[in-house]
Length: 168
Image (cartoon, rainbow, N blue to C red; front, side, top):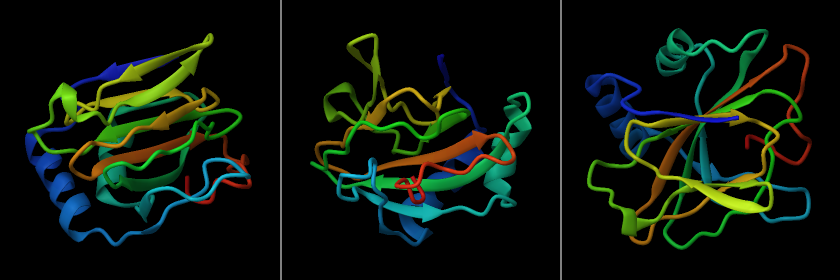
């Protein structure tokens, strides 16, 4: 299952989140996508009881799952993340926080490996994509600017993230 929703947050909440992600959030080295790969990108944790997380919880309900992780991913131009899965069970939500000037030649899609094919979701500002957390996927970087996404990982109460994934 891979689902897309456009214009997910109000314009005011989108603008607040974009400013926070690009100007205020503290970042550090990203996590490994797989146990045998090097870390890619940068991450900034978001508290599970924060207002932005609540915006998503108010609009998304996945039966018997709760938000287990929340963070912002940042990839520099030219970075090449690896395909990975997030959890054995659960749902991953990605929210695109890039600016309004994005166009199709900038890159930055999220790629999914499905039935031997790569399928991409374009990083349209204020869009979410949510999908089964066990689908192999990866980010692609933008050509000229940093790529920001807010990630929410929904899982069962007692499930832990994959051991190599750190915050990713």
